[in-house]
Length: 496
Image (cartoon, rainbow, N blue to C red):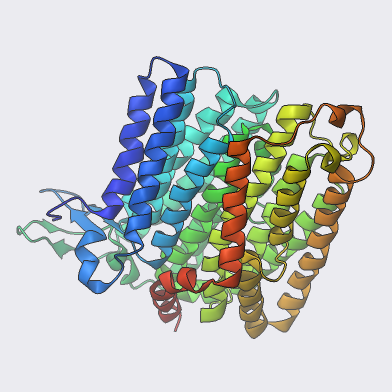
């Protein structure tokens, strides 16, 4: 039992309570300010947790509450390597998102910002949970607010798109819940400190110790993998994503693409590979084929897109496909690269969405063919966008370069052919990114762009923060790598 409130508890309870309070805010400005204040508090807690990572601070980073006569599920939350870097990404992303979209006026803002904070609480819970049932609870808590945010504040086609999103995620969640219950029924019991005895347990250690046959691991692997693949998303489970990104409010799109896609990758790292190591090895080639196919397929679709939001969406699918492939290479350098890249991708893709939102807010269009010469009217925005876009294609000295290099190294160690095919994605990424920059930001300005103004001070500051992170992590990625070393050793040990 925890004797005092721990870091993971604060990361969950602060946005949860903030979200509930936001629903009762009488004025829209109050809800907006409260959400931003709470997100900054969460960031302060997460930043502080980065300095208390050693074994002597174990009681600060984990707590396990239980109650008598339970079914083997406890409130067990912990910050380990992977969880810590993703909770920090979540804590950092929300103030950036809320500040960048601060000028946006949403109908019923109390509900909008309340749901945003509830989604943050769910995300924090997913990344901290060490109990399978608790993990599933927070998985749903993160998704449900996003469903309402998309359906209430989305674009003209929001109902159809949200329904498709709901069907995909609901089916995936049911499959995962079926797998969780099956594994739970095969776990050994445990005795708690007060003498409480349970016959089965949902704890991660109990799940990892279950002895399952190869066939059992095989079908259970797919139950979990489909749920995680839908969330990433990986080809062919990706079809809900481009439309959802296009029709969702931009703030929600940033959460979806910058943070929520990491839930699927995290699920593979925390639960899938450690619990089903034999099946993970057995089906690694199938997953690799799906992931590499997704890289090429999404990149080709991004090249022919006229909708700038869908271009960014397909580029995200390609990047996630590379992370998934490198993860199933199941070697230390590839896994380390994925963990580093999860953080980098979150920062870069949010930066891209901020620029897209600024353009759409001022021009009212999102078609690339209708935009031209933005650099003449918004030179500061153009400079910052070019830096973020080049980071998104992993230019050396930017944050994504180190992670991508490590992922390709791990992929090459697994198979040179997979690495070579995935490497085509680098060329295609350069094509669609540079093509978009050239068409939208350079050339002669048109009547739509003539009324465009350069970005305001707070928008410059937010994008400047993102650019600073890009260069800092690009030049000195070691702090991020050090945070995830323990998680890498646990994962690689599971498949040996």
